[in-house]
Length: 542
Image (cartoon, rainbow, N blue to C red; front, top):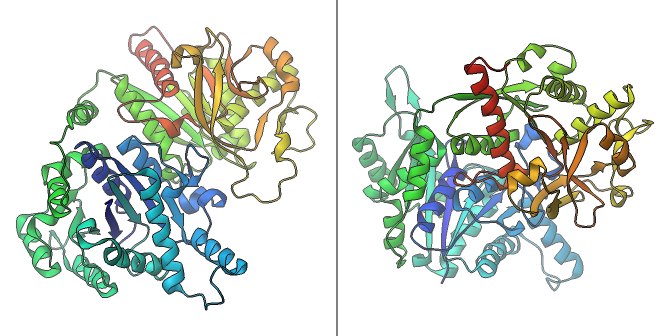
């Protein structure tokens, strides 16, 4: 029988439930168990694909093309498993399916209600994840906090799961905040008590409470929480703010979380092996011989969660290259207005990530030109590749006219254009080129040297592509098309010839980076940026 672990949150949002759930998955996997993770999101959007990054942060794309919550990126990075679209369920998906079934007459004329129809649909998806993955343990995180009205159907479904599959096969973990009061210099447990009482009022008694705090959680506080919240003393787990999120599995292991779970759920498993993970964390925390300064030039830099996978991929690569990483978040709108352009001068490398819409585009083009002319290592991701092409075309044709038809449909030089199969699409949600596609690499190219193989599979999320009508002209100007679809029709990777490192990918390599296995393109980019940083240190470079 599959075991189910349900993670809820209390007191405030953005506590790090996703990291907690992912870390539980990591320590259970280290014991030889097969693990998968699922996120239940109470919002009514079918998926986050049409939401602004300011609303939701990054949209994380899976191998099968599902546009999902950013927490799924954390799950994949921690448990090192590719998840499927079943791993992200929203209220929008649930109600859409229930209404579709009602329209078909599947309910035999019954009155459709939240209980049992909506809750049954939620449980069916949870059980389907278990059935299709055949995982030993399914970890389910519920978005939001206890008390949110939109989350009640999900919590009711989780309450019913214990009755459906048995107490020995379900475990409830509640993640809460212990706020610090500066006036008395103490952590307060009362919000946690109220949060647990709210959860118990719904019918769920937590088996474990994880307490987020910025200060040490003392034993007397653990005793107090255990007493007032009716949980075992060893099941009150301090989660103090760590130097790196990848330290959290080691903290949970230190407090015996996996042992408690396995004993409580009668799971037979082998002793843990977290040596590789511990070595990785130690390497992250150690003093490095030098530092690399990378600028991320984007449209949504005010909210770093909009680029969380880019941030993590850069850090994975920096750890692998044994250097510290300093990230400068630079607004492309500021560069568009020629403000703060001097910030580009001190950088060892620049990343231009993806995005949609015209706002800030000229600032990204300014960035691409600066990096090309000044030989600054440049990594363009999706839109970042497209603006690199636009900038080169403007220089080649000595005109500001070259553009993408996304930004100027009437341009006479549409070097980036809408894909033919996207032209007649009206619905925006889930209709882009999404998910994993193969890419053949040109022998001897920078991309081929980075990957070390001839064929790769990468994840996409875009509508516009390189316009093949300009292959020959831009090729003569120094553009190397180093990655193509197997039929040669679609440009997947472009490089600037003779540049230390100027490469753009139409796909999103950041989605496949792992802390113990950085993505090859990010590793190659950080190496080039590190070479520039060391040259400046030694007085041999700019």
